[in-house]
Image (cartoon, rainbow, N blue to C red; front, side, top):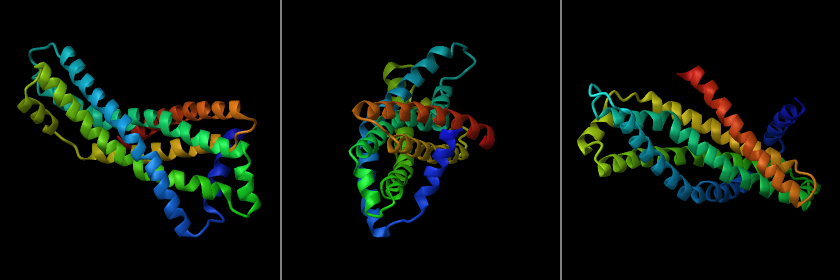
Length: 242
């Protein structure tokens, strides 16, 4: 309970004693590059293979002659949009971006750079953490959209190249009974996950004490706690919004 209360106090400090908006624009652009652009490669690799594996495993389990092959495309589409793209990408996002955020802030804390900002009268939480959270909330939904497209395309490539489904059947499947709300639901999840990963990782890094060993421990805790928060939020959002 002590940590949860400290976390909410940390979040509330994001919005007090802010600097000029021009300062944050530059910081947010820098963070967008570090958080979003530098994560594109890993998202491309993982989402493409997730779609490919989903298509192959779905085809393997569809043994009934009563189920037509185009159902493979439908299942890949729904699994990708509802769960795989926003949630699996979020866990990867927590591992890559969350650990970096915690390590960066932890290093600044133990080298007394955070203390130096506070001595100069700058709210270190707002100056250091707010741009990271804004950049995460801006960039992560774009990564999820990219993951959706590549995962479905990966399923298309795997299905057609292995001969388990034809091109026309797969395209018919991803168009069949499409519910636009699933995309809205995935975007809501992506916004929540982005905030959780950035805020929890920043919190763990910001309150690091000790030396280099503790910075590593903070990074590990940031990833672990972010993954737990993502899974809990995933369950709650599914219960509330579906």
